[in-house]
Amino acid sequence: MTSDLRSLNGAAVGGVAELPRVSYDHLIAMSDSLGLFEHARGDQPRIHEGYCVDDVARGLVVLVREPQLDATLQALLTTYLDFVIGSVNREGLVANRRAVDGRWTDRPRLGDWWGRAIWGLGAVVASAPDEQLQEQALSIFDRCITRRAVWPHSMAFAALGAAEVLRARPEHQGARNVIADAIAAIGEPQDDSRWYWPTSRLSYANGTFAEVVVAGGELLEDSALINRGLKMLEWLIEHEQVDGVMSVAPVGGADQTTTYPAFDQQPIEVAAIVDACARAEQVTGDQTWLTGVAAGAAWFAGANPSRIPVYDKRTGGGFDGLHADGRNLNQGAESTLAALSTLQHAHRLRLPAAP
Image (cartoon, rainbow, N blue to C red):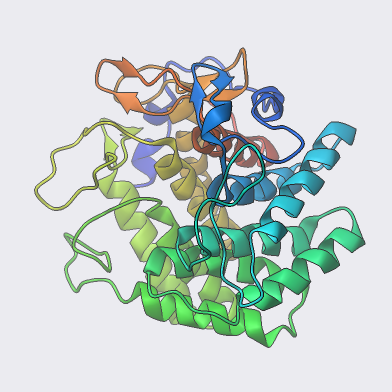
């Protein structure tokens, strides 16, 4: 590993007094007996705009990572799982959008939400506190993985769920096949040290590609894959920092002509890098990767190019974007879950937000 990741150490967290606590208050406020509302105006859910599997599935991942689920969060876990199960048809296709009255408003397909549904189901199989929930999730997981998406992101999200299942059930050949197919869909990085990435543009949730290659290399027992994924992640971190702080690709993506910092930056980008760094540390035992986790937590706490917190300590919500001169004040589900996921990693690893 070069000094690129280490350059985040100290400078990336400077000016942040403490690591914010993980609060599920806003997640609970954004949820009802059916699911998790997608959008918010300020810290209030936009109820009339309904729900989506993309967010509810991410909610499953966050909830099963919590080591001490109280009764409210356990009920929320069941609600979210029922929502995802209800989105899957007999052929393993997944609908995404649901109205407040319970109607599914789009036809089942193989978009990102299919991959995220598999991710959420896999997380439940591996980590839910109730064996019955695990078995329910596994049944639907098995149905979904009979299909394959043509989009690399969809396959990458599915591979994260498959990795969870394979850790819990090493004999599960279907999960193993999903991971192998996802790595093939992601493709190999370009043979260019200036742009060590499989595509000519960075788009969204970029760290997920690197995480899948690292996780796949471990689970498929392929050290060359592990090294490729680590090199991708190191390149991404080097590319997405400015003046020692994390500075991720903007909502419209980035290529070799993009000047950083670029805006608006999305919390999901930071969370994907943090997930990948946590995975890299787990697989390699190299604690230098934890610097990336700390830098991501610090980004939410205000150590970012705009020096503005992107996590609301009062509500427990994540703000919907970082601009050069401020932040999007809406606290939607995606941003809130990205913040919670990042802080979960930091607290689990007992990382400070400041040196």
